[in-house]
Image (cartoon, rainbow, N blue to C red; front, side, top):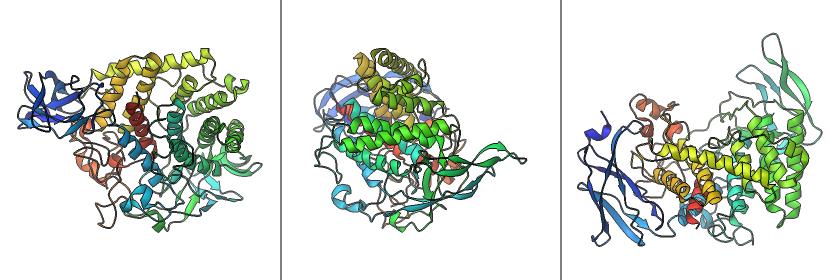
Length: 583
């Protein structure tokens, strides 16, 4: 029986932030009625400004609801409104041209608040979120020992200063692989020109504001600088388990020239408890072995940064390009060194399919240099552009660069754009198969599902730019509506946004649920969202087998599989909010 049949009254789910005047406006109403329902939009004075009737969408498996659709796109006058349906009234929402700019700025400020190695100051973060620097001078030695497969890692003959960067998620680990897609997304937003208005110098809340450089690039540089520090010094030999297998099936330890590779992560030896402020983290910090995946992430991101900084900081651009070339060469020399797995205290981010990383790195280096060697390494066709990007599926990032970077030959550019438009068409086709009308029709919601939807929105936004077709922008609006409240839980998955915002993410500092002395999350933080495929935390286990896919979520700090935050999830939120703020 659909959950909505048990409800006594209609439930109105819509974007709790609001709408731009010219954008589509849709509410999903969960109600058992099989006939259309009357609806009215009222202003702050209670005056009716628009009326209509719902269309019946029927039963929806992903939510468990019987749904109605209330379309009120004709509401274009700026102001504050409420929607009434069948005796139920929504929360207050706004129509205005500037509804998304505050969200974009808040979502970017998340990255400042996740910075390691520097104090987080009240004037940039707000008094409640000011804190001492975490890991202010991080000289890390290399891990040595056995992984979960029994492979032995022998450490390395150096320590590295890996101060800085962003904490990845709710823990204090810093990961090159996940940092790669996150910082790439911010840099791409700058490169596409979508954020010139909202992130012009001095608009964002960060220490570099006012330095005559774009605020978005300033924040991205904080991570790029850290990724450069994770590179193995030139000419260094490191013993790594790369084969052949010994009698026990483990990989033999083999000394290799690891110069130019990137260490996979730096992280705590053991998980810290909640709450733990970064400055109170007393666990030993370990520099985990280099991996080919991390190396290709560095090659891609550093090459992208070299393009973007070439005009304003040629020395930094040259440093980035040199690091990118060295990483590419190192990955060719060591093409299959996989991340050590199975350690407590940090996430694994293991990935043994690396063709997508190679395609991405080749695309970035080619777009930056035009060199024939990188062009020859580009994949043929639209490989990797049929789905949304993710940390382990990065081929679409390279396709986006080939479609948007200046100087890419027209034949390559046009093919990349066609591939992105084809992917966007596939996402739009899924919309009508979902009760909540979002470009994501899967009946399985995976870890970080909200980021999958936001990354699809990014491709839809690019398709709109390439074609001028408003349908694609409508798909972006649908995705944002879902994240901001048009979902079966009536939940804004973003903190500080809407009448039912995220309040208790899995985070060691934003831990007000556990301690009155810890702050709640600052505005602009997005939850990973429903997760019906890996319900492994204590809260998720109580829901397992009892929730429709879109309802497998809880606003609880202990629900790490459902309600963690992460840099690669907030980055597409910044991108989408900035896109929707643009004209």
